[in-house]
Amino acid sequence: MKKGKHTVLIIENPQIDFFMGGAMEVPQAESILPILNQWIPKFDTIFVTMDWHPANHVSFAATHLWRQIGQIIDRQDHPIELKPIHCVQHTFGAKIHPQLTFPIPPIEIHKGTQATIEDDTAFQNVGSTTTLTAQLKEMAIKEIYVAGLVLEDNILKTALVGRKLGFSVSLISDASAGRLTKDGKTKLIAYLKSQGIEMV
Image (tube, rainbow, N blue to C red; front, side):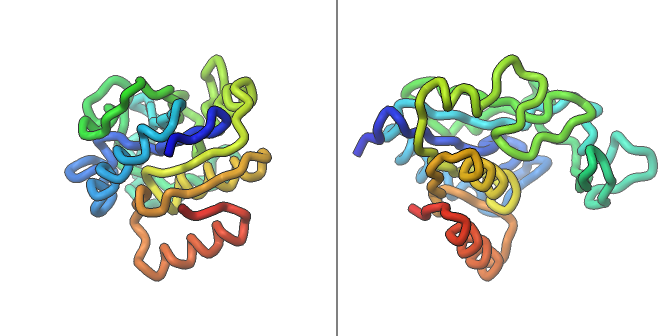
């Protein structure tokens, strides 16, 4: 059934670098692709969030002398876990996975576009001329469905911020993947439910 005009789908980070062989590979991420393709036609409006980093981005371990992947640094008044170089602007790894099919081109939300700023959610796209929040309000959106990658990171934060901003938020759990254990995923979903986020 088609969703109403006041409802949108946000797909987090469906980029090649997050799939098998990519710099930020998420285990079994490919399994969500056919499920996403079943959901996509149900929405008139789809936003795709994309890491869109300069080559010297603050989150890259290679940007910091003597630092390693997985180390924590303190920036922007909060810690940042250093990552491999990934989703560099205009590179192959930054592209949307080719197995996703969109009847209508999605609206791209680029994150982490400035070298010194790490954007953790779809609602923080610093440096762009417009924000996702402004676009949703302009479209009179009331309800958000979230799916994609990574469940315990981008999806979690986007869902919580969306709820805080007053939107009704639903997680498409089987169209979302992460690096958690089965028990960890169960606990995370229970937490999201406790924050008023619906599961579908």
